Image (cartoon, rainbow over all chains, first blue to last red):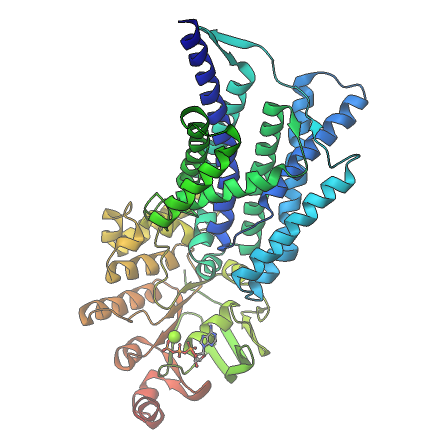
Length: 313
Length: 238
Ligand SMILES: Nc1ncnc2c1ncn2[C@@H]1O[C@H](COP(=O)(O)OP(=O)(O)OP(=O)(O)O)[C@@H](O)[C@H]1O
Ligand SMILES: [Mg+2]
């Protein structure tokens, strides 16, 4: 009797954990899907932009608390603003100096992929070398309330709820931006037809820059969410998160916003399933999830969500 | 209100990669007129359109809209000067609704009143678009997409409308209808630069025209002159 109640609590914990992970994956996948939608490119450095975001946040925290600031709300706000600014700027610089010129020179997609792959390594190694003792994990501060809401034997962490809601708001906001605003309409136009979008009077380059700022900013949020949830970040966190986010975007159908979100939660669902229901060691959860992803991609090469006309970014 | 700005292409040369497609081309689209560019496939008509709009900028010579040199002006800024384009093959945004397509045509227009006014005019011209305003453009018939593309080109109330082969792939009945509409647009005061292969109907509505052959202007004149010109016939039947 006691044992099964324990299991229920543990089970709920896994579910909450899975939902949180799913949200982080979905946020990363949204970036991949935005970049692909607008420019038909795979930006492999996206995961490492997330790392840069998380470490910028940590840097801001260390600097501000060093200056004596201790109000967690103010700290969190400034941490987010700083990380957002750094990554948005990084995204725009990468687009301006690398992606747009490469696209203009009609570089093969493979070259862009390779270049962003190398860029990712540069970012990752920079974080490692720039941070004192950068090879080891860094503690990420607790800036959210630590309490829990008791539901029977299970205690729901308030910070998980807050993080989940924040992630959901960002996704809803992005969706609103793309489907309901003039900027979003321009992003859709650029995604569908670059030349014709220019003929509408749209400044193609600025739309690309804005899209890169947006996708990179969302990655920073995902990085900070991850840090706040696990209270720990490390220089290679973007590697796995990037790979997962990319797979999530692919399973959902690259370029499709809903697909990216679905893919993110699906991946986390698979990991959770592996942990909860399969008689395999927990460490194998990623192996299991990626294996299923491979099968899914083989089964539905263009993604789970059949591309309806209106849905692709 | 009638347009007062001439478009002048002077001694312009351009092309793609290492190859020049247009050689020393001079063309004028007079304010208030319908000016046509005739020429067979591959003559360089669409390249001329791309050059005017800055998609394939001139390599030498120049393009001016009124007093403004737009030779090296980037496409979205050319549009901002009052030129609008109905591109070859319609190029509607296939995943956007009819209304979104039309709104994109008015992307540079700030005032919502003006946009609403343009929408009203377009719906008057094409009542079908009003009925179908929530339909996804990619699911429409070729003729309907042509309406979307023309309507979209009008949304910015341009001074000059550049139309690249509007009759392409349309039924004869709809072609006739399209030419009527182009004349109507011109009657309302918009200058038109009309690229076409449909010689007879084009000359019937144009004031002045040019014939392109292998990237050069091989003949020009009033439509009456061109109708009886040897060059026109040889450009098409040789
Ligand atoms: N994007 C491009 N890249 C390379 N060459 C091109 C491009 N567009 C056109 N060309 C070449 O330029 C020449 C002129 O093409 P253009 O499209 O201007 O002809 P056109 O008169 O519009 O023909 P059509 O009546 O078939 O539309 C052709 O030889 C074509 O192959
Ligand atoms: Mg053409």
